[in-house]
Image (cartoon, rainbow, N blue to C red; front, side, top):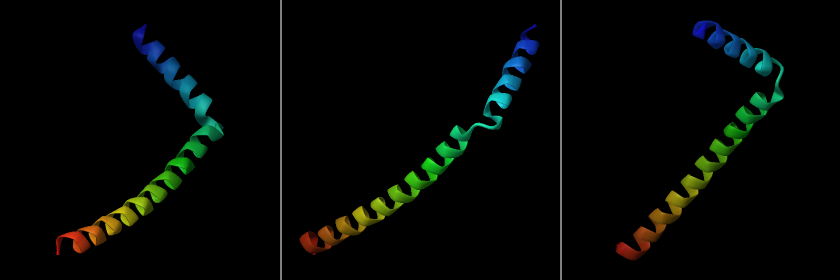
Length: 57
């Protein structure tokens, strides 16, 4: 009985996500967010490095 419920729920999930654009939009949003965060992190690291060179050397 438990195995049938798991199979049923899994099939419902697959069918529900099959044509769903939400999954596509989430993955695109994650990709854009990661690229922006990487860019911002790099800029902050360069700014911190410049500050350290100026104030500690």
